[in-house]
Image 1 (cartoon, rainbow, N blue to C red):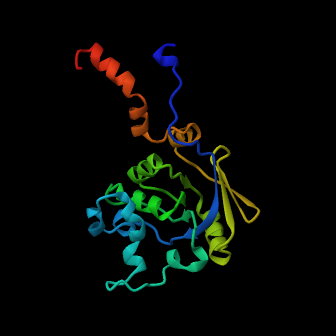
Image 2: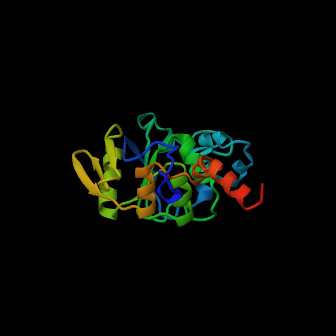
Image 3: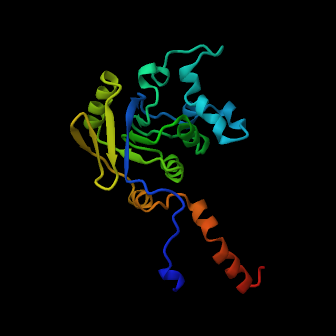
Length: 207
């Protein structure tokens, strides 16, 4: 089999559908410093970032709760984050999507996303879905009024179903294809192809 015809290895599960409850974080232009304050970037592993997600919005300087929706018992276990426009703007720190991922969020629906943030989310297996404002407001109201309402995201059909209503969404075409093929993490592609890389290096005299 020629290299061009070799099947692409899949190291991650294919993501075509996601089901979970939602949580709405209101506000346009929520930047990466709000998502994960800079002082938490000193962490040794990304696993430490989950509890620090939106820390300054959730806690006072003394660590007392501000009773943010992320900490509300009714939203415990929510896996789909609903946001507004230009979500993830600011610095390109990959810690922001890592914090979202480690907190347990599996998908984000917003009016728009910062491009680098969206790319970093994609490599973690977090779909970033763009939804029109009116539809997004309806879903936000639903999850606020009925926290246990489930959202079904269908990446193949590019739609979200919530409370018997179906909403259209958009996604960057290359990201959508990567989720459906299970090829959204380029590092895993590199690791899967190490034997081919070694053969090529030997042929070129580098090894």
